Amino acid sequence: MQVKRRAFPLAIKSAPDADGHFSGYVAIFNTPDTYREVVAPGAFTATLAETKAAGRKVPICWQHNMSEPIGAWDVLQEDSKGLYGEGTLWVDVAPYARIAMRGMASGAISGASIGYYVVADSFNEAERIRTLTALDLREASIVTDPAHDDARVDVVKAKLAAGERVTNREFESVLREKGFSRSAAEEIASLGFKAWSRRESSEPQADPADARALVARLSGFSLPK
Image 1 (cartoon, rainbow, N blue to C red):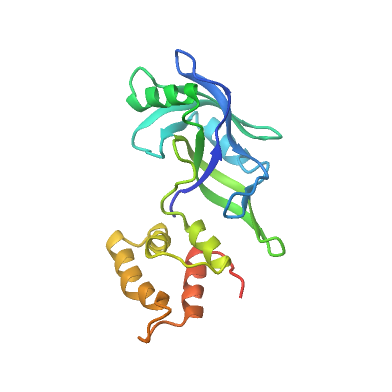
Image 2 (cartoon, rainbow, N blue to C red; image 1 turned 135 degrees about the horizontal axis):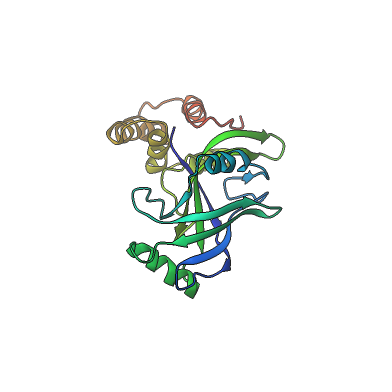
């Protein structure tokens, strides 16, 4: 199971001070994103309790780079608005922490993105809204472009639901997120998906309904018929 990502505007309450301390909201409740997903109040309750009980802190990452954290969230708590955090950037040892600090203070960097596993969710067929009701939070990043997240199955789901064309790279992302190696994903997308998506060609191609069913099965998402 791969860590998923969800981007939010970084609602800064206090910009980083000289020691790297800052505060703000890293997630907002009940706000649909472009993939028609919302985070429900209480979604972080269990994971925050488990983290606290284990004596751990959730890392602050730069652009989701888990191998090079730039700080830690000293406080993470839910309120009526969303997930509020108070963090410390490690400006004395992490170069990207200083970049984040300078960018946040100037207003040039204003993105937050959480990395998580989905524990529980629900789907409203009438409104086509997926509600994330329980999340296992792994990290919360400072990002320069919160709209750009590679390997997002949600991009493919949203496009198919809207009847839009899906690129080979996006289909590769579905396969990579579901555990296929890079080479296997590239081969499947190149040899299989290209044939299906070649609408104007007279060459034999896979049944579009079968391809849609494959994507739905891989993504765990129910698509309209």
